[in-house]
Structure formats: structure tokens, C-alpha cells
Image (cartoon, rainbow, N blue to C red; front, top):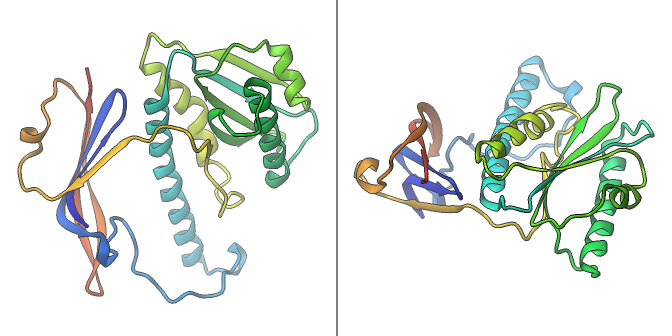
Length: 259
């Protein structure tokens, strides 16, 4: 497969990527990637040189940035009139991420069973873990197509501390981005080293995915997509690896509103 145009469509906007050079995925010319290196034994952060530490931080930061985009798209694609926002905290100061993650997963299973009376995972959700100032982990969860459940019932299902839930204003599409940027982005971007190798966010497998199209064309995007309002546009430099050489690939990006 090869492409120099990528179009991503959610419920309320379209994103258009125009690449200066054609990307050949079968040759592993993936955008914004470094050449493959010989696999070496994984070293922890303190064992790296200053230059290697900086490279790792930049690589993690780039991955987390891409995750923010992915979260925004998933939210916009799955948002409905029954979308709610839930935050869970613990009385105990749980500072181990893996321990908290296990507790969160058990909560999702119990909540799913309470609603659907089955162990089959039908709950639709998107979640991000975040650290409080005291060092304890907590979680922000966006629940899609979620029925009304009294807060005291949610407190019982969680059983470990505070529960805050509210329905998101469905009259304003900008509310989706506001909730994501206010809560989710902070959790995705923080604690880079401690979260290295961990998921930047968690989501159920039954979420609808944004539509993604990739193709080759040298026609101007203006002739491909008709639109009324451009929400944002920029141009930046990416990279592709081809024939043993790392090449610059200029990218034009445009975000277009869907009426």
C-alpha cells in the first residue's frame, strides 16, 4: 500500500494530511519513524547517556502526543446523548500504577455486570489514569451510551473512595473537546518515565473507530473535499525511511468542520 493523502473522518470534522513524498508502507516507510536498529537489550533510563535520555523522552512525548489525537477522535466518533464523565479516586494513597490499574479493571467488570447482567464486556468507555498531587493514582472515564445510575450505586460498585459523575452537555460539540483537553490530556502527558511502556489510555474494544482513507493523488485537496469552514491548518516536517536513507517529508495538515 502507498499513499500521499490521508483523510480521517469523525462525527463532526475531517482531518486531511497531504504528504510531499509518497509513503510506501510495504517498504516500512512509515511517516515520522526512525530507521530500524538492531535489537539490543533494554536498558533503564539511568543507564542511558544524556543524549539517549533526551532521545527517549522526546520519543515518549511524541507517542503521547499522538495518543491525544487518537483520544480526541474516539470521543468525537462515539459521543452520544447518553455520554457521561466519571472520576474515581481512592481513600488509600495508591501510588503503584499496576495496582491501581487492576482495581480499575475490576470496577469496569462489576459495572458492566450491574448494567448488562453478563460477563461479556458490553460497556463502552475511554479512560485515562492521572496522578494526584499526593502521588495517588485516580482515573477519568468517559462512558458512552451510558444509562442513568444513582451515584450511591456507583460508590458501592467502586467501593474504594470518591465517585463523581456528570452528564456532558450534548448541545455543544465544543464540550467534547473541552472535557478531553481539561482532564484527559493532562493524564496522557504526565509521568512520562513512570508510564513508559504502559498504555497512555484505556478503551473498550466495542468503540466505533474513525474512518481512515489512504490513497495516492496529486490533485489539490480543495477539489477532493468541499467544505465551509477550516478549523485549523498547519505545515510541518515529518520523516520517512527509504532505501537506507532518512528523508524529510513535508506535511500539510487541515482540520475541516462537518456541518
